[in-house]
Length: 124
Image 1 (cartoon, rainbow, N blue to C red):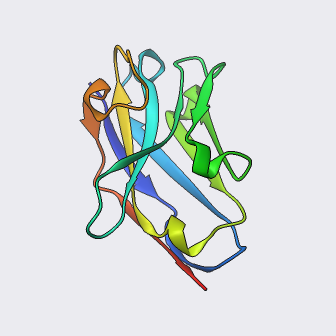
Image 2 (image 1 turned 90 degrees about the vertical axis):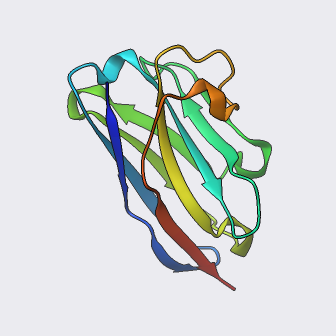
Image 3 (image 1 turned 90 degrees about the horizontal axis):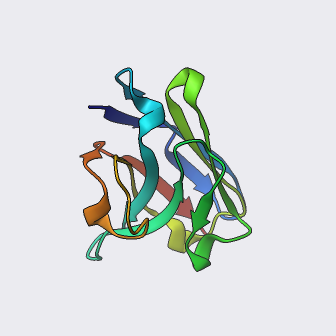
């Protein structure tokens, strides 16, 4: 199994950038597809981006396309979310998740292990 731990959140002005990191313990990191989700106060947790085991395939939700990029370094057991051109509506608690057999990348049910989240706040 793996245990994801997120870092890199913070307060940034609109138009700025942040890079989130998710370090996952365990020797089988490359066996897991990885995803990023976010949850704003009073809202459902929503899919942001996902990446395949090898990193060759990525998915982004429409609202972040062209602004966010997901990547991974299997040698470092780490997945990243580079966030550019941030908007106030990107403010949320961002979660990293790992799934052994991801059928639908956008579904929370596809993921087996979750981190505790890292807060991203974008001021206008």
